[in-house]
Length: 427
Ligand SMILES: [Zn+2]
Image 1: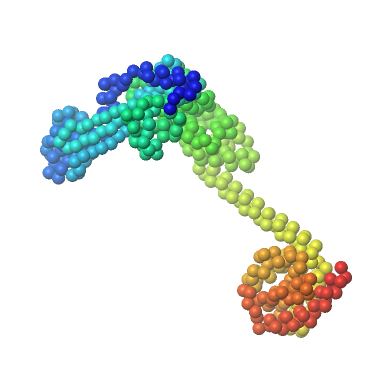
Image 2 (image 1 turned 30 degrees about the vertical axis):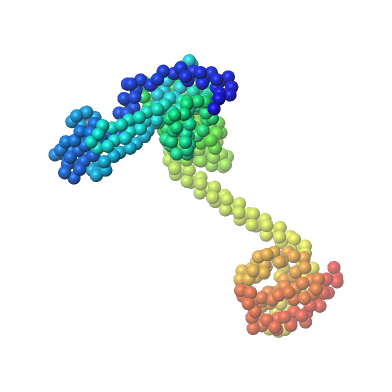
């Protein structure tokens, strides 16, 4: 990609002037980026994968636990009992340097191929540079990747060019060269060669763009620093007053995500977020869990109140629609039929008879009137009458089935339908 603006043009020109990696740095990378293996056969013959030398060792147990050094090249070897003959690996190696006022992170792809009996083959290529200005503005210079989602698939023949910033350009190196050159802004930030499992770019960028990152680093609140640098969903400013209380009280936040959750819970319950009593709990996990339970209770209570409000509202509407029929009841001596007079009664009727007549808000339909048929106060069937047609729409017993009284009930309602008509006329 061609440099698009002045900044990119400047970086592109500077990147060409960076000195090549030195022999010393290459050697250091080869030695430190990989584990070095000695393959051991069943007969106890160890082959150093670095130089290809083999020898027979008698101290099987000691070798297995402590490893051993090669008799020829002296490299420290980890012993593997295997019949495998080859070994391959690749890693990233990072050199932290400066150039003309920029902080530069240079990433090298380093690979290693070993075959028992021959000297190991190493390869390295600079694949990526991150150029960071003291204000955090940055540019990626990189080679092309064949398939960017697969690590390591670099096209080593492509040029180091300005590339759009992509996630896979934010590399976590296996090791970083110990001699580092830093711009004054990073030196002052409290950076002490520890990245706290952040990528070098993420840490430097955070330190250059967010003064709070520097405060966290200097105060040793590194889990928090890592958490806020990693997660874009939470903004450190929302927690800052409480963070400052923790720092002032020497309270170390070890589990940043739980602590932030906990602060949100405190906020929800309108607790004082400037009070160490709340924000610096001795047992964070226990306090967090206690507030989680409290919030769950609160939510349940909300649900209950919501259900109550709905029932109340429904009942108002129900009364408005059906109160003119309240009080209607008739009997043939055995079966008693009466109009149901509240949402509560309707719900109970549905619960006892286990039918679904009422789950669809039948009782709120202006045209339906719901009556209940009982014998000795025991609910037998529920009847729905169409008010416009003065006809029985349905009569249902337990689980929507008809009972032995079904026909008698229908006849009884029909016989007394004039009671309903009378109320309709009166309105
Ligand atoms: Zn060796």
